[in-house]
Amino acid sequence: QVQLVESGGGLVQAGGSLRLSCAASGSILRINDMRWYRQAPGKQRDLVAGISRGGITNYADSVKGRFTISRDNAKDAVYLQMNSLKPEDTAVYYCNANIGALNWVTKDYWGQGTQVTVSS
Image 1: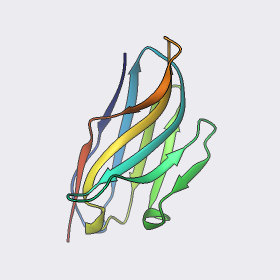
Image 2 (image 1 turned 30 degrees about the vertical axis):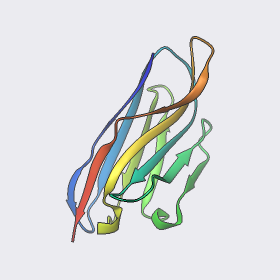
Image 3 (image 1 turned 60 degrees about the vertical axis):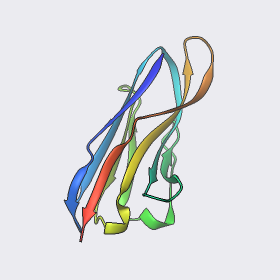
Image 4 (image 1 turned 135 degrees about the horizontal axis):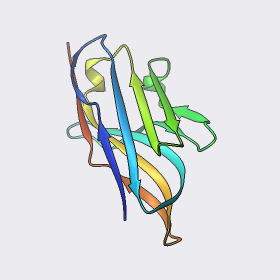
């Protein structure tokens, strides 16, 4: 069994910063791509940023230059540093990872989500 657990969400004023963390645990053989998604009320879940096992990153245009995704392969963790936050960044943020488990099945796993609220 594999689990992803996020932490680090909260309430922040516009212009502030937050750092999200996501740690994977369980019967893990290998973690491939790791990603952060977000979903605002009444909207679809959108990709925010992704990072390959080798560290290649990609970002949504709306967060380029403000957010930084990173990972620690030794800790099976991914992070999202969010700077210059805007009210439109308010959403539930979800961690996603493509994981090969010890049962030789590789699939995407999701965390439970963490709320980020940016006040104006």
